Length: 277
Image (cartoon, rainbow, N blue to C red; front, side, top):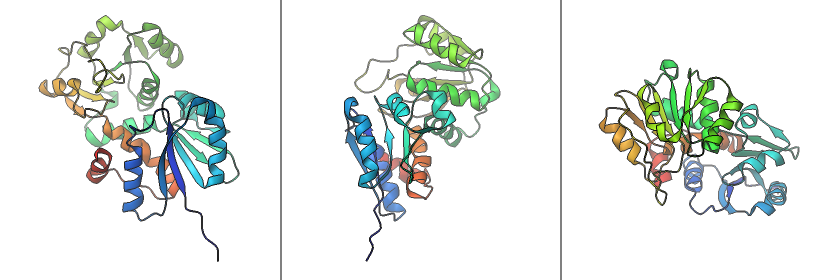
């Protein structure tokens, strides 16, 4: 008798123990009645290529890639989506039946879906977006905001040269603001995004002045530990519409799960509860 292979997926990072992805995907596998598994894998940079090429032989249909391997994974892949190329990093790999590794980046998709779900009246074209940070997450946010029609992006980073590199790449709709002036970006912004780790448990506080925030501005923080960051607490007090960062993690996982396991999961309160467990 023939036994069908049980589909396996997982997440590769270094470190990886903190990842919420395993809880999330296991919840979907169980609730959808799919006989598959999703495992966290701690892989050192030197071993990444070898591991990626051997996983399909063990029954893996794909993996998520997290820090610090997102850029390297893009180089290893055989096929790369336009959005992964634009962002310059891969967070999702699909192992194809023909042996090729297909790289995608669903971070920007997850970011936008989170805003659309939790701030349904958000209109990207209503005005400028102010972005704090210019790292890998910021690239995904910038690309996706420009894609949905934000007219202008004001970006500020502690190391100005990193923000300038993004400006050179993404063009005229980006304006770089000095970190000491970062608070002033919020005066005219319709959307405010923190893409830095400032304010995260174990990281320094986000010390940017927030008195420029206006009522009705959509404010989101990619940090989700704690769920309510100082930025979101203060923004709420000032009448802003706030969106926490957990939803981005949940939504970016949807297209990956669908590609690997053949069923599209939904992001609901049970999904959130599973990720927070």
